[in-house]
Length: 447
Image 1 (cartoon, rainbow, N blue to C red):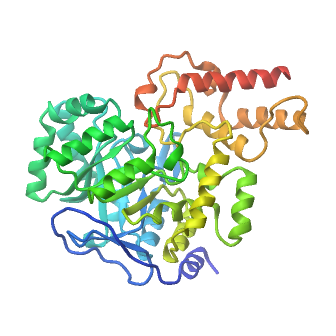
Image 2 (cartoon, helix red, strand yellow; image 1 turned 180 degrees about the horizontal axis):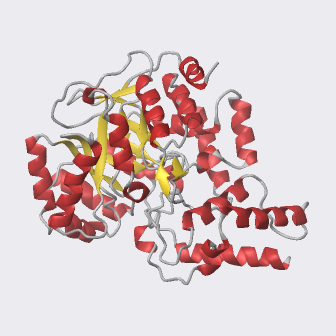
Image 3 (cartoon, rainbow, N blue to C red; image 1 turned 60 degrees about the vertical axis):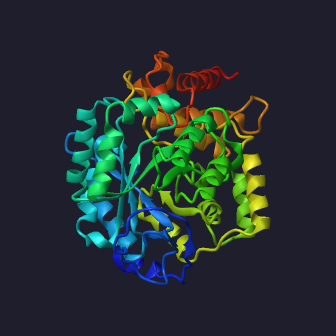
């Protein structure tokens, strides 16, 4: 049996279920999908039938070109997109900022091979650097070319929580972009206009006030939500997801979920937590618990997953083709897992790579990923009194050198802070790099 036959056979699944979520947008012909497979959520105002599983295009598979540069593996992307659409996935989310500007083009190449009515495109105005009207409009127009489309179904103001109302005013209002985008919506080039949010409660409240007063009516909103951030975000730099969800739901604003797996960390939880999940559901993946948590809430229209290969795509489709919400007792269990997860000394990095490139060449997300993996897989060396300490110590040091080239390791951070303004999680990146560097030095010294 070849690979394609395996994918075709393993992808068949039982019937999913559709649930309702409020929405507000002009009407469009319903996207094509195969009834009875993918779980759907309906925007009752415009009739969109959106797959509960959305494809996040921030983590396309990468390969090296002939010059040794990282490029997107377009053949692999095409295969994944074909399989996803065949199995009912119809929401694809990208941005001009993803993968150093390569994501939109790869998504456009893959999606344009299918009928435009068979999928919804979501992309963003990611004008973090140059937010002049000229540069912002160019970014907007370039997205149409890259995505090979003449309209966007869901268009987002990208991460407007950082800096609160003042940053929003600078990036979108003072430069005339909000007036421009609203006119584009009237023309039908934008069907739904919304925003993605990372930030504190006060900033979020200001955007909800805009909606309430009619200053700007939001058609949808994208928030970070998972069973950790539901009640255990830091609460200062990032609001808890239960608060964000409740505020959006009571206003009838459809909700798109990002980071349901916290950059993959909730698919690779510590061994003790994984064991508890497997005792309850031996045949289900650890990741499926996180997706089911998000999908249990009816105000959620779509849950994004940044799938890098066919394996997570197959597993996720299995979850959403047979989607079963969590029971009240299972929600209590997930809160217990969240509390346990908070006990581990992890860096709250989702591997979004917004902090890259570092001007000093440091592989910031790679360092954090290596460290977090060591903590969660039980190979974290803590003290010389620890059982198998010497083995754990040597394993960490050798794997660190293999994963991160010496010139890109944490000890090269000078604390310039250029990465700080770009991190949607508000991680004190230089502090965390110095903490990991100190940990490495203690391991080298055997103390």
